[in-house]
Image 1 (cartoon, rainbow, N blue to C red):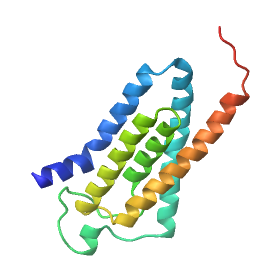
Image 2 (image 1 turned 90 degrees about the horizontal axis):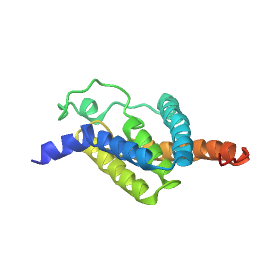
Image 3 (image 1 turned 180 degrees about the vertical axis):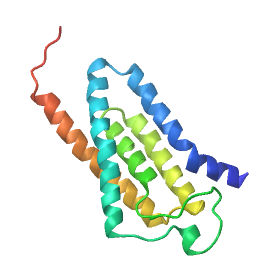
Length: 159
């Protein structure tokens, strides 16, 4: 049972986080939809790019490759640092913080569970997950600041 739960969290819980974001977006007011979508379109690629860049400066094999065991889920050996999943979920959780605190808390919980599961499964070290989360949060903060300042500077018309 433990293995099934860990695999679920590592592989499928990110989809639940995306579904929660999509559900929130569908019921959000139009002004929030536009700003949130634009901020996400900036934050997620930025988080991925920053994570890839960080991986160029610090590189190590994944734990399953370094210690010679089979991971719970088949995976190619590549750089473990930082966790792309943690960066993406960290960015989503941080971005949601500016729009809905409950959604943000749920996404942060998902990010923590996914990160823990990916450590347990042998894909990452804890440092990889923490670094991914921090890079994602920083990317979301930059993206939100840029997008929000753009929307704040625009003249508002209620037609």
